[in-house]
Length: 350
Image 1 (tube, rainbow, N blue to C red):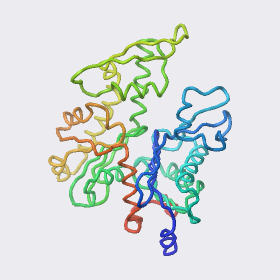
Image 2 (image 1 turned 60 degrees about the horizontal axis):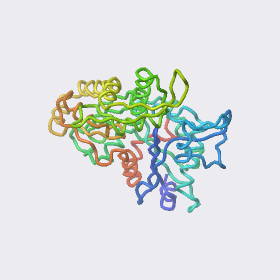
Image 3 (image 1 turned 180 degrees about the vertical axis):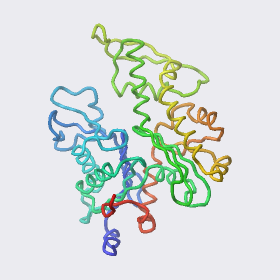
Image 4 (image 1 turned 90 degrees about the horizontal axis):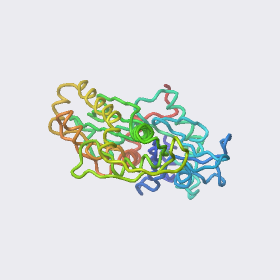
C-alpha cells in the first residue's frame, strides 16, 4: 500500500466517467482532458478495431448509421454497464493511452464511476476491462456520489443533499448525507430512451425511419418536458417505410413533448419514490436545499419545472451538468488516500 502511494507520485492517475453515450477522462491536477462518444468501429463479425485501433470515440460516432456491410459502429455500453467486454476493453485502452501517451513509465491508477445499481458481475467486468486496458489499480465509485461531489454539494455534512443524474442509459436518484448514500434508486430509463421514443413516434406517425443521431438532434433542438414559451418546428429527414425512398417532414415541439411523456414520467416516478423512502429529518433538509439535476438528460427543457411541480421542492440544474460525474472523480483522485477505503477495487470480494 505504501509502495502504491509512492508510485502514485509519479503516475498520471485518471478519473473516468464511463458513460453509455460519452466517456470523459480527467487527470489529477489538470481537470477534464478527454470527452468523446462511447463508440467503437470494428470489422463486422470480429472485435478488431478499424484504422489500427484508432476508430474510437468521435471518429467512430461519425460512422453511426452510415457504415457499409463490412463495418459495425458499436456502442459497447448499454444501460450504464458493459454489454460487450472485448470492445469496452479496446475502447478504455484507447482512451487511457490517448491521455497517458506513455509520458510516464508507471501505469496510472484509475477511478471509474459506475451506476449504483449494477451487479457484482458487472462491477467485475469494469474492473477487469480497466486493468487489462493498462491501469495499475482500479477503484470504483458510485455515479450519484461522484455527480453530487462534482456538482459541489456538501456530501460530507450531516445534512441531506439530493442528486438526480440522468445519463444516456441510466437515471440515478440519491439522497446523500455524511459522505454516504442514504437512499438511492436507479432505473434504466434515460437519454437513450428519450431518443428511442422520438424514433418510435416518427415511425408511428409519419412512417419515417430515422437514425440515432437524428433522434438525438431532435431532442436537443426542440425537445422539452414542459410547454415552451414559443413552440417551434423542425425539418426531419429519413427513409420512408412504405416506399423505401428518402423523405423529409416537419414536426413540432408539442408532438416531441408528447412522445417524451413516457420516459419523463418514469424519471419523475423514480424521484418521488426515492423521496418517499427518505428519513423524516433528511426530507426536512430537502425542503430548503431542494434537488440538483446532473447529466445530459438534465438539460431537457422544462424538466426542472416538471420535477419541481411533482415533488414540491426547488429544482436546479448543476453547473455544466454533462461533466459533473467526471469532475467528481477528479475530487476522488485529488484525495485518493482519504477516499480509497470508501471505494471498491479488485482486492474487494463481492
